[in-house]
Length: 311
Image (cartoon, rainbow, N blue to C red; front, top):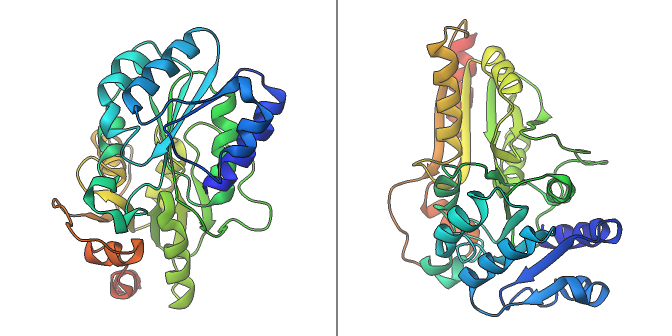
């Protein structure tokens, strides 16, 4: 995803001379093409992420659309105060790009795991929260943020994620869009971020009849499209590489409750959340290994049992 991001950012910067990229002394072998093409709109600020957020705010106040780029938790957890006060309070055009969300940097241990940041960031006013599911979505999100006015957070995978949306990708995105990957049956799996490929492979390999929806936006979410999903499925499963508390599944539950409180839903689907339990995993390993340790796995029985009950 990071390659798709930087390649699309280059394309956007060719037609928008206000795009500016800041990096925190990383991204080598990824960001060089941007730096070579736009040396006056690129700056390596060093290992100083909080300062980087402040510099971004200043550049945005001068009219730039700024992108901050660093590893998962460093431009987010380390910079919450700067994001809240310097960027979001002033509703500035700053895009916080976290490469390697979730357990992508699993071999480096808990200090490099970004598994709580979505819950923190989605509570901050003015901030759009994005988690593309594949390179095509990452490309579309980059185009969206290059034209959007206001602060955005973009969580992307580390590298090597395959495309799920084929052959032409999701196309252009509107704020809060939900992307249907497949529509089949009364059970719907709602995925956000880099879990999407796992979900589509699981459904295909197990020959399961289930709808799959990708959520490149966690805040906001298109309520009309989500309402239609609620109304057309009897069971929902949310899956995310994030703590269960305050994450993607929580956002879905909140919206569902609001519809129910207003008595707008004719029936309320059951919902199972697959997310990280309230604990740290102080082990090093691959992203796949840590996902399994945290229970980020689908169970065939959950879907088949729901289908049999419907029948």
